[in-house]
Length: 163
Picture (cartoon, rainbow, N blue to C red):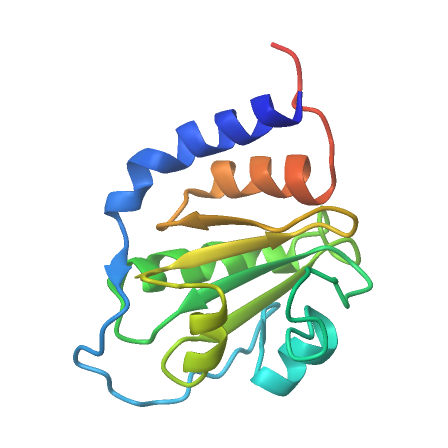
């Protein structure tokens, strides 16, 4: 059943791989993005404390968070990242996920080590970190409904509604 969830998620996300940017420096305005809404920008220190301390546990995934989380790896110059950002903000602020899921962002230009740890080659890349399972990565500007489905199935481990 778990493989079916992954297959459904990947089949929905695969066409959107083409809506991503290569993780190369292009027209970087080097302006620090200020998050006024629900997502929280992570530095390396924050990441080590709130998500995974890969320095302490380099060989295995040990989740440090109190709630499942979703992490958007992005850059300010990336068009698809700019399309994804308001969707992530909306979901982060929604009553549906408030207090249940933490929403984070990692600027790959400011935190290249974090991007390297996860092998980020294309942005946006979205890391789904459940409490008691291995993380799953998706690439591209996923639509809101696909993100909600992934959050519900991967992070909150809710079965999809039968149709």
